[in-house]
Image (cartoon, rainbow, N blue to C red; front, top):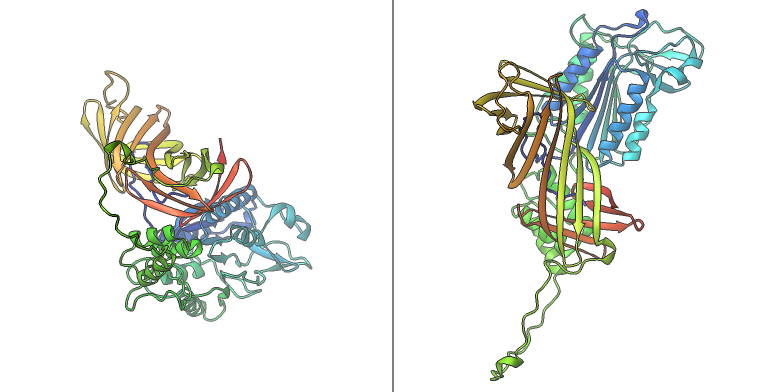
Length: 529
């Protein structure tokens, strides 16, 4: 049960209003330069990783970044990446690595900064198998993935019979595009000191272009690298994808384009947005009257509106008009009294109770708690939390999450003796000190426990942030909603009484404690309290 109301909140007084994006785009970026073995040190992979983060953020990706990653960092980061792309079947996942890499017996290994490799026998215990990334993507079962390996740099690892320089080609699983900085067995040039590797330099340049499909874009990268290296380095790719993916579409980030179908051609001259495509797919998968009605209500001018009208008409039960009753004077006491009707009916008895679901959204720990009643009334609570460190100077605020290492920046100003206004990327919120009689600390204006109530997308959020003198913080935000809901015949639909937003999909009873809900935001398993 993934509600379409998705709100992200900047903690430590940084508000962020509701997020409505195209398809989910998540990237894991790893750049290794500072190797413990002095002979392995490289100049530019960290620069390359930072350049890729900027380019991918501009293309609408949420980024997970690890610089100078140890072996354990690889495993943890790939596990986090796989979990996040697995939450949305329409997600686009991207893995980028810059650093040393070798192949042995056809297996590609990425080299962590703490690796101690003297022979092929050391690889399993010290290096990271690149195939693990592909396996994580396969397990996630998301729609499309991109793997970019700038890991063919010539390096001074020992030459052994089984261990070779460069990388071996990997078969691209369905829905995957794999790009290598150099052809199999070739080495890649690291570039001038303080800049980018030749391959990544051409890549970020090509990614910034608008309206260029992925495979066409990569052809431009190949041409640029060959020209820069006078033909000594030629990037390589393996692909198994349908349709076209654009880092930047016609004026905005574009989704991976699904193949056209005979039943749902888009309207001429108009390309549907990614969220519209995802909502259409969800309605088509459920093929229920409620699902199509929700789609038509949310996208009245959709390219698929005609198809939705046809499906609604075919699924609407035919009604035969009853003959008009004769006027009969009946005693008032014999007239039937109207009976109260439930908001939605019926509700599957197996779903009556309280369920919860924990996730990570926009780098915040987020918990959903839903109480479902037999009368079709539901109550939803969303709690977001984050802890980490903060820095402030000259009206500028910078925070870093303890778990994710994700950074945010905003500005603040004092507006009264006990309140400040904080401006984040999506708006301004005024916070007040909780302690009675407390005033803003002139040396550290953010110090103390702060509280704010603000409205975001029609939803009222209550947020509290504890900012400590040692530069750490812990914050929580809470939102509550009442919903009209229906759960029956493995179909669910809800409508918020506060925001008016609706959502729907399917559900599957796994056992007495666990229910799997699927909707236009993906699939999640909720557990009974």
